[in-house]
Image (cartoon, rainbow, N blue to C red):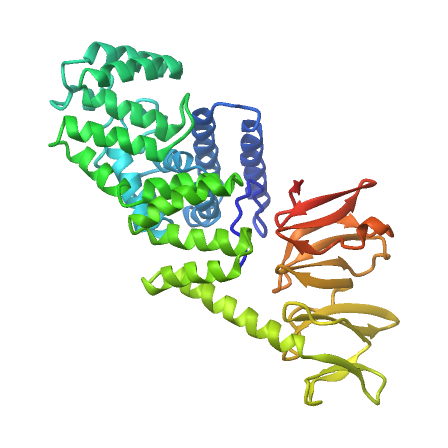
Length: 467
């Protein structure tokens, strides 16, 4: 199993020069956001940036091309910043495009959540730029705050406080808006309660919390039990989704203890993705493999397909590891090397110039061509998993192995590949003779010791420097 990770470093290959320029503009817009502290502003600009990228591709290529090139980033926004993805969907060219994106790239739960938010997040509708709205979203009113505010659902009590909160919200004075919305809510105003929930949903002036937001929507529903919008939102978020979203945010931030608390709460509500996520923490983060497997089995027994796949991969890895531990290298009569099992039977015929011991079901092997050593990897059955494209190849540990490209000297930069040969961490780290690096290049408990710029430090499986 590989730990799920989120990155803002988008890579787009094999497209026209115009698309590359459009993507550069998009990346520049995203990068500029990292200097901003306010999360709602970031979400708003992320949504605008992706919409601009989408529009530019339609103008320069075709709608099909635009959809194809934009879809991966919509998926990443859904995982990284739900609000930004929502705002992008509100700004795509037309209702047909928005529906297409939702049907093809969002899960049913995500589609339901988008629709629920679109139906009642009235403050969004008043800050949207662009003509695209879902068919069931009231458009902003002419000269007033919006059709929603003219609805019979707006209660009179607390309306003055609500209006003051709305004015502060429009001015991006979120702390002041929160104060007024809470005062409105204390007077029983359902819209005030909803708006407090919305601030938590956005993370406007407060730490983003879907769980806290849900509690305020529940209060709004209690104040106005006939409101179908509140019913939809509460029903959607009460099945563990709110806790799962919050837990996922803490997981991405590396706060696994808090993530576990939210996932455990969601699991108690029958949320299978949370049950699976707990397994990922136990297995990948805490390295409690037995506990992780039990957790995956719990989710798999209830029909969660990702957990079934995780168990399948784990079983294959364990079989491969067991088999590879029993294989030993030998030198054939031809002077080349292969591997035998404990019975002395040839499993891998002697055909390699050099070999290294198996680790995690993989062994680095070397061929000689035109006086050049070329390294690659085989599995325990002798299948060549990677091409012979490395000048050196080190053992696997926790699913990754350090390797350096051909044509470079021994001190060239090493990167890390996975068991399919995919480069996961770029070639950034030169080899160095140093006693402090005797345990380097190998992952243990999710981090590996590397050398760069005359210093030794640790990186995680994404290449990020860690303590």
